[in-house]
Image (cartoon, rainbow, N blue to C red; front, top):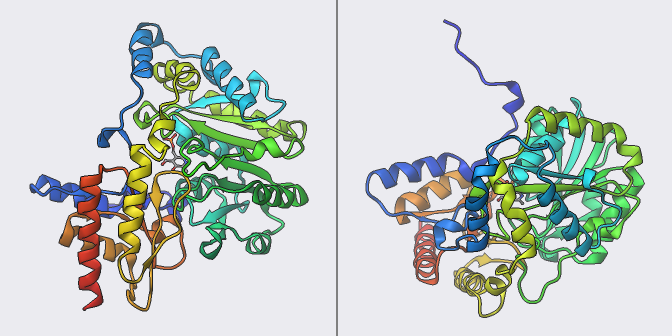
Amino acid sequence: MRSIQKSNKLANVCYEIRGPALAAAKQMEEDGHRIIKLNIGNLQPFGLEAPEEIIQDVIHNLPAASGYCDSKGLFSARKAIMHYTQQKGIKGVTMDDIYVGNGVSELILLSMNALLNNGDEVLVPAPDYPLWTAAVSLSGGTARHYLCDEANGWLPDIDDLRRKITENTRALVIINPNNPTGAVYPDDMLKALLEVARQHQLIVYADEVYDKILFDGEKHTAIASLAEDVFCVTYGGLSKNYRACGFRAGWMILSGDKRHAADYIDGLNIVASMRLCANVPAQYAIQTALGGYQSINDLVAPTGRLYKQRDLAYDMLTSIPGVSCVKPKGALYLFPKLDPKMYPIVDDQQFILELLQEEKVLLVQGTGFNWPRPDHLRVVFLPNQDDLTDAMNRIARFLDGYRKR
Ligand code: PLP
């Protein structure tokens, strides 16, 4: 009998954050082992619950939320996003330019589905949040990875970016604050990226889902606020800033030169209508989240849990021989480098599996973020200080053993 095959479009799709190591960890848990999971940026399981007022909003509005809503989202949610857009200094946005989705994830897929023809190329950072590469590939396009420079605080390498542009390039993806590196881009870098987009008539896709998770007084600038002439799509949501990953509530905002993008916007509307609408109950939380008490600020302040955990993980990791790391300025991750001379890793997925089996700590390998060499790991710093200390000690012990092999 003919076997049932998956689509060829999945050939370049990888999503290692939920890859084989996670499956192995689940099996180990079923076998009774306790695994310390530093693999996913999901806040609630670490005691970082969503603000009570937004949970109450969803509960209170549940009876009214059983119908479909407008495919772009609830009016109240979009009004609140509109106000937020104004605070971020993004100009010329109307209610029609705001779409609510089932998390930023759905909107990324929707945006790529509506844009790409076979052979079209999209510039995606390396390392990246791998959904971007996957969404481009699944939509028939090709992700061309431009390097971010570790020696320069993981900022995009503009020369490399320019080298990757071809006549088929349609768009430029920017993840700021960045997952996995924690880089927050200064305005002059954003302006340089806009200049490239302007010259080559590229759409700018700005994934800014971590825009409130900023350390050391870092400020976030929405790239769309710096250019009224470049067509930008800016993504945000409740998952990270409001610790509500499971609500699946995100948004995207169109700005800049919408006149020349009219046909694409038509495409976006078609794809948005096809999935009817986003999860309605969670949309009720958006207005209160954006207008309410911003408790995330307390968590990222020097006295806050996230700040302390970032410092602890950074200090412990960088005290391991041969491990260096750019200190993250935002988001929830560290992306340390293992000196290849001391750790001559050939297959970093295998390395992660061995770490899991020996020390019961789950990380994600750097190549899972489309980083070209097997010499980085991504570490989530969400567990409390005791668990983080335990995890860092285990990683140190594993690396010690690895050096002595
Ligand atoms: N973009 C980035 C950079 C992320 O790190 C994540 C999740 O980790 C997402 C988008 C997905 O967010 P959402 O939960 O809104 O789908």
